[in-house]
Image (tube, rainbow, N blue to C red; front, side, top):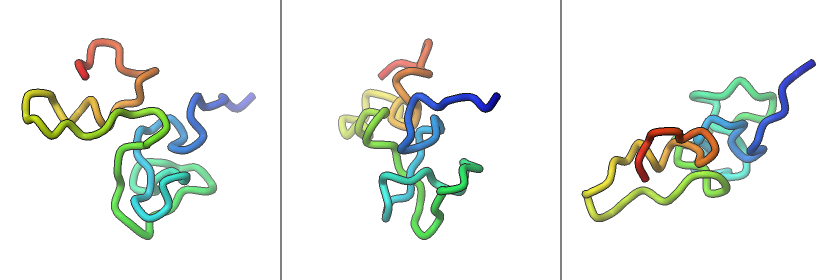
Length: 73
């Protein structure tokens, strides 16, 4: 039985197409609806914005909240 993703926007990868932010980015996702017409960006549905203050790792912005574990925001 196929697994059900927690986030349909990015297929649980944390990356969506910058031109189509409701579709997973094909640079990291194998989903049938993945799109690669733009660069990858953090998923607006399950990730936090890229930190602008320079004090937090950008890694947290590309890691879905439900997969973070020990990654600091």
